[in-house]
Length: 393
Image 1 (cartoon, one colour):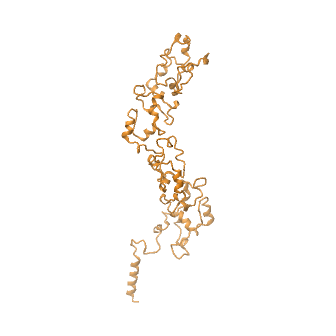
Image 2 (tube, helix red, strand yellow):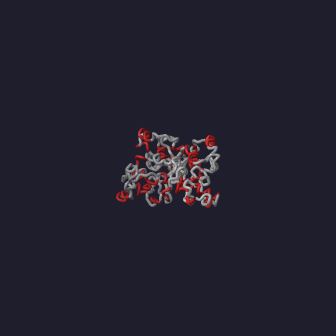
Image 3 (cartoon, one colour):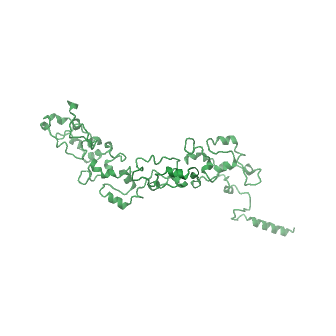
């Protein structure tokens, strides 16, 4: 064949295969990519995958007819590899199995529990990798297969009281990012079971935030009350509530259980209406623990009263009010002032005017004589009774 024809034939052939600068992804001018270009199939460059940076072409492709064929077993012996995969469901000493879990050639996959618990003792222990991972090498939530095992009918029954439930992989992982199933059961103190006001409300409406460690999982430590409770209506309901603010933290500080009855019934426990001495006191100034708002030990009586009146202790030990058992503790304050009143001592018979005509009783102390507690307010002393005579006599 004349030389000019040969040259023309080669030029045409090379043009058909593409040039070095061609953008074609199907016909590169060389069939063997560089180490950097190999990342299109499997990373082997020093920066991308140092584990395989020293591997040669023949280590993986030697003895095959095509570079599409490969083996991992030339370098990774069976005994060592099996020892590195104890307890890994579905493990096989097979090249395709290796690539399915280690598509980037990295050995970090055994840290699965940090992403989703699968180790012994967890709910998903013993399940093969391919059962959950539908696309080999792609371990992102979008390719998970929760619904393969969790049938729609069974799952819907279990979630009968869970508001906003949908039978989708994204919804499964959003609420169960740690493989747990007991979120609703551990929801206390906020009440969501029947007949609570928040029964069957959507979980993700109240908990819209996402976790920083698992971007697909809901952050159940963050809350949002404002998505359902409009500002105008909420402000109207709280028009007379001191310290009210339209903010989730403020809502939960007064309503940690999600109930609304405590503020409305408050006067029956302790007067806070406009005519009372505590009318303008903020909720948080008295309640140090909103999860137990009626526990007398959690009130902060002394916080305000000792700062407003540093001589309060001396006032309880005067000749007019000889309270010898005085102490500035919430329990003691509420014991004598369960109705927010301050005149018990001044209205008490004194000296020879006491029932026994014995002025010595003024030194006994209030709760030494009045030992009984009230039926309506178990934290308050019943001053209508004086059954403590035997304590001294």
